[in-house]
Amino acid sequence: MTNAKLKFTIPEEVKDISRVFSAAGFENFLVGGCVRDLVIGRTPKDWDVATKAKPEEIIKLFPKTFYENEYGTVGVVNEQTSDKTLKVVEVTPYRLESGYSDFRRPDKVEWGKTIEDDLARRDFSMNALAYNIETEELLDPFGGKADIEKKLIRTVGLPEERFGEDALRMFRALRLASELNFAIEHETQTAITKHAGLLEHISRERVHDEFAKIIMSDTPALAFDLAARLGLLNFISPEFEKGIGVEQNQAHAYTVWEHLLRTLNHAAKKNFPLHVRLAAFIHDVAKPHTRKWLKGQWTFYNHEVMGARLARVILSDLRFPKEIIEKVVKLVRWHMFFSDTEKITLSAGEMSGLISSGILLICASAIGLVLVAPRKHLSACVNISR
Image (cartoon, rainbow, N blue to C red; front, side, top):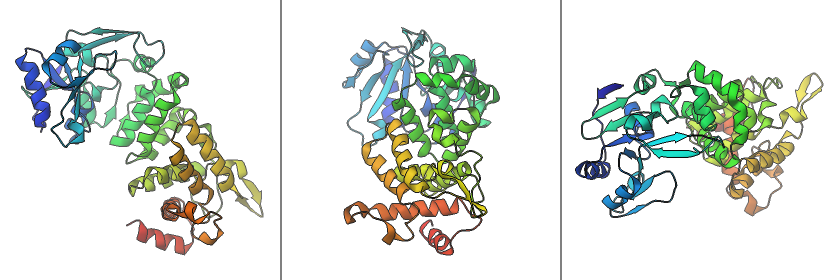
């Protein structure tokens, strides 16, 4: 095991939890994503603690907790803080897991004896780090710190075993790549392609969670490009695969798939909201269905009409809420007309709030396509995107 002395800024609320455990004689460490983020230099979005204490012992040590699962995780509640990331700190006993017949949950959970036992069950080396708050020591049995420094995503142990335990980890690798702008290690990539079929066992609700996080990341195109190359895109929706390699007309420098990626990345760069990002990624998805050669060029008449229908199918399958689906469907249906709103046949109520989102979509799409684009589109986009 590689250990290192490192000093991080830890909230007092988290330090207090560690002090309570230590005073009671229980070893405890920060673990998981919060340690990864500290090493990277990011502020953690949540805080997780692993300890030698059992659930009933954890509950006795703190005045307000909740314990509503079968895997030992106890929520330690702090009502005094205004920081949402510290309202609940999840504390879990060291665990050993075995058997994953549903490709998601362990069939058997036992309490582990050491922190090394606990770290060995984790997904990626960057998430298999532990930090002792009192000694300021980083425990790194799987080379996670070195992988972070190399900007590399690598599984703990054999990737085939980790993906067999929970197939969603394949999508999680893509999501971490897009959030952190990291690469996925070669053997891990190979295993993803080989075992992609395991995603058939994963519920659409869980796929939705990772997909939505990718969409809202800083570089979502990176993840979806990897998904296409590694054979995962079909498990998001087979409609996206149909746009790969599909050439467009002379106004477009890119294929349909490349255009969707560039449009989405621009929407992310400008921090557009979820429904606009989804529309950016979906708006031209029907072009492969409507593509015809006419008068010396490719045409895509009424792709926005079919695209609206496909948007509803795709987002419903991915378990998005009805409110989001309706917004995206309208944006896709009318994305060819937001520069000439008189052609949009919606009521005043339906138009409310739609035009501003539509203009953002037009801007992202125009910047994501161009060899040639209407000058009025580009000048407006430059102004609104600043």
